[in-house]
Length: 215
Length: 90
Image (tube, rainbow over all chains, first blue to last red; front, side):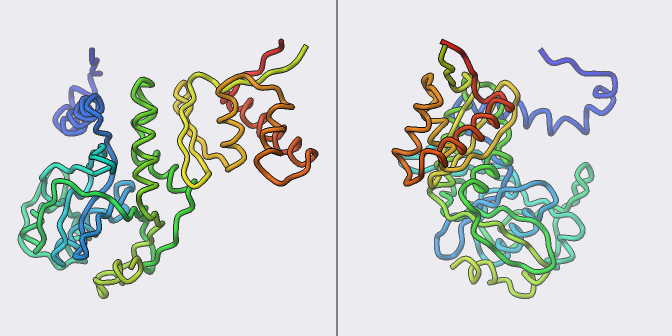
């Protein structure tokens, strides 16, 4: 049973996307797919990356940047972590990459379709020069934040685990699924090298900087 | 009467490189724990006395009994204040 307040009914259209996303998250959890607020991609060396973090931390802009360099993109925002053999993979839905005006300007991206409800320009990865990867096996996890210059530091184990929990926060709901969800978060952190990543504007002048910082 | 400690049923735990993260499902909060904290919480799956926990630490690490006692007491106090563990008397 879901109760909507009069205010929620008035804003139903705006809340529709979030509402159905939450429903999807709870349904997928029953299949062993656990939501993570993060982007995923595969670099030219075949390494899987997971970039887990909040809105406005540079996920979509970085996703668009690496797509423009030919990387394959799983998702720019919403992934589902699941067991696949001995590994944890991130599955992404095929959607466009949504860029805010600042991201469009940084990337110098042309074209795109304006999404009025999200105030973003939408690009398919292929339009930027990349491709789509439905499954990404993370071996590098980065926790981004915006800063003056691009840099990385290795995330200590505790920081990596707590960050994974933070960006997969539904782990704190429904106790019957929590241990398996938490085990998946722990395993994906253990199978990967984890870094705190500061994203600066210099990344757009040196687009190979990510691979140079995390060889 | 002997005091015993036990992990709360609402606790979920995972580890990486000896450190861990703990979820408290009832309060919807999460905590990070150090390597020794993880050893203690793992031991508290079943009820343990303070002395048994100190033994668990001195068996695992090269520390004095006094040092282990201080560490265990400090950790238990933190866990009790966060409702991660129960205390009972037998």
